[in-house]
Every structure is written in structure tokens, then in C-alpha cells.
Length: 602
Image (cartoon, rainbow, N blue to C red; front, side, top):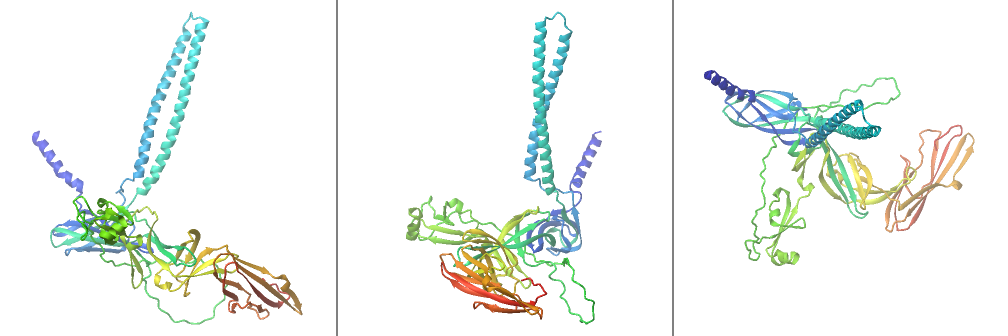
């Protein structure tokens, strides 16, 4: 019997490791870097694995499940050869429980305990009611009771049963509310848990290893589960100072992985831009049947090509400022004294200052002796170390490549895979701008402040919305279109009610006449501009007159008040300066002659 027991124990001890490991050599990949394209992302993971000499099977876990397998790139160190690879999706592994789910579950547990307590009260209440009814029946069978005793007993039963029934009703109401709360909490848990229902990608590799050793692996691939869009903040403090343009990016990733402390790069390229260049084929003319144009829905063409990767992984060591700092050239320093630290204008003690990571420091200046004491008093007798920390734009470096522009962000980012939108500031500019007020009262009675920027092509901007702030007030949204062929970038900074433009028809100078088979109409308008600001302004005023596309319709411009006239598009432009409180008037008059039996949209 003892031998049989020992044999069983030996078999169990032998089988347990095999069951626990399932015979698989698997490692979890660490997300190292991500380059988010306008659509999609290039993601790089690293891993370490120990291999035996010769043939090995290795599973690399923890990849995104939404990858383009054609883009998969695998690099191995130490001469390891990849014989074959196969990608699959793991639906069984669950993500780390969410803190929000734990809080909700704690609430359900609390309500569950309350529910149990109330059910105990209800059970006791029912037992008391049953006992009361039983005693009432027993009392009713007794004889020899006087009328007074019988009435007293009936009053007691009535009062006690009413009390118990009321308590039962209160408990049932509480129980109903608790059940509703538990149901709502459970629905919320289900909703939150769905966010954690993630599938992960895994890679099965057949490898050939020259030696038994530990090797480094780099896995890169393209996934379409990410994107970024540009947007801008435009701030103008006044109409005589540069416009501050801040270039920002909103990015989202839904790869199923939480990107933790990842090195992030944004690229302006779009997958599919690298497809084959077009060729012109022979163009043969032939007669065709004219057809009326019909509404069309633009098609969407998406082409995904294999993408090559560079190994951009880098290890970083976190270093701190020395905890013992002495400034040479200062007064004698006692063991308990240290320089005064000023970080971004705020005085900080030495212990806190020495914990600042060098990666976050933009500049360090040292003040000694008289200059230090003059600024910070006697507490600066051992010198002052002035530290300026980096702003967000200091962490972004721009690289202009042959086919795109990339922005490397030197801050490690945490980006959850749940699709929450995050943003980053890429760069900012102070743009010398010429400010002018613009109005086209025929189309819009408002007067708009425009900022005209030259040499904007070098900014490497992309089309996007812009949030506009002028003189500290949010104006609204505009749209920056750097793909325009105009030489200047025209920014609309909102409308200003203090520059008033009025357009009115002058009836005395407008008329309609019939000349034989023709009708001649004369239209005359007065445009009035008034500057109620207490500063001078530059003004652009625009209007138009109609153009004819028919031989029997004649248009003649009669009066333009010295405007610049563009006869090709029928516009009149006045550019002028106005003093504070000044009013200017302009006249536009034109005549239209056409057959009297026709109607025109005049």
C-alpha cells in the first residue's frame, strides 16, 4: 500500500508542471513604440525568449488582434532563423479587471447584504403574524370571557397585526428598491465588462537556433485600428500683434491593447499612398451620347500594402539630479545648507528638486553671490539654481521625410485601447499677420476680421478645424485649408460689430424702361461703412454685378466708385483705411438689357 501511494505521488509531481505549462514556450510581447498614421498605425513590440539549440517552437502573446498579417515583420537576434510563422487570435485570455467594475461589484455586495437582512426581518414578521393569528383562534375558542376582556383582546390583535403588516409593507418596499438598484448596477457591470472583453493576437513561430541561449525578438505590424486628425488653436490678443497658431492632434486607438508608456510618433502619411504610379494610355476620340448628369456618391478606395519597419526600440535609464549640489564660487557651505532651487518661477526644496527627471528640463541657469542675493535675499547665499521645465511642444520633434512629415513625441504616453480620444500639442507658431476687416454685404451683413499670413507653406500644416480666440474671447470655429493654391493663408478671426456696413438700394437712381422689344433695368446701391472703434482699421469691401452668358442679355457697369473691377467674375473690391469714427460711402450702379418677354433673377 505504501509503494502504491508513493507511485501515485510521483506521477502527480511529474504531471503537474506539464499541465501548468502545457508544453508551450510562450512569452508576452512588450509594446515598445507606435507610429499613428492618418489612418492606422505601425506598432512595434519586443520580447525575450530562451531557446534550445536547434528547432524550437515559440509563442509570442499579447499582440493586437486587428493586424494586417501581410505587414508582419519579425526580427531575431543572434542568428536565429524564422522557419515559419502563423498568426491567430486568443479569445480566452481576459484583460485586467477594471477598477470601475470592482467599485460596482462592491456596491452590489453591500446591497446584497442589506437584502439578506431585510429578508430576515420579513421572515420574522411573517412568523409573528402567523403566531398572532394562531393565538387569536385559540382565544376565540375559549369560553367564560367577559365582553370587556374580549374587546380588549380584539383591540390588541388589531393593533399588533396592523403594526406587523405596516412593517411588512415598508420592508417589501425597501426590498423592491434594493432589487432595482442591484439590477441597475449589474447592467452597468455588464457594460463595463464588455469594455474588458478583449481578444489578443498571438504569433506561433518555428525557429532554428544556433545555440541554447536567450534571444531578443522584435515584432512589427500595421493595424487599421487607430487614427489621428489635426486641429488648431488660433489666438490673437489684438489686431496689431502676431497670431499664435498652435498645431494639435487628436488620436484614438482601438487595437484591444492598452498602450502603456509607449514611444509615440504621428505621421502625416496614409496607407495606400504608396501604390503604383499611374500611366497614361492612348486617348481615342469618338462620338458619344450626351446624358444628363446624375447625383453621384463618391467611392472609397482603400489599399493596404506591406510596410517595412525600422527597429526603433531604445532602452532608457531614469537619472536624477545629484542630491548633493554645491555651486562653486559661493560662500562656504555647511552640511545642512544647499543652493536655492527655483523651478518655473516657484521656489522648491532640494529634496523635491533633485527628483526632477533630466528629460523634463529645458534649461538650467546658476546665480551666485550678489546677483543671487539681490533677487532672492539671504536664503540664496549658497547660490540659486534656476530650472526651466519643458513645455509640451518641447517634447515634439519634427522630421520632414520624402513622402511625409513625422512628429516624434519624447514623452511616454498611456493610450487606452477603449477608443477614448486624447490630444497632444505638436508645435506652435507666432505668425506675423496683416489684419484687415472684410465685408461682402450682398451675401452677409457682418464684418469679419481677417488675418493674412505669408510664407505659410513651410509650416507643413494639414487641413483641419481651428478654434479661434480673439482678445481673450472664444469666437468660434474656422477651417484651415493649406492645400489651397493661394499664396497667402487667410484666417477668419470672427466678426466685429464695431465696424458697421450697410447696403441699401437707391430707389431714385434705379429704374425700369421698355425700349421696343427689350427691357432695360438700372440698379443702384449705396454702401456705407462706419468705423465705431477707437482705433484705425484697414478695410476690404466687396460687391458684385451680374454677368451675361447670353447674346441677347447685355450688362453695363455704370458706376463703381473707383473700385478694383474684375470683369471675369463680376466683382468690385475697395481697399481703404478708416480713422476712428470715420464713415465712408460707395456707389455701385449697373444696367441690364434683355428681351421684355423674359424673366431674370435680378
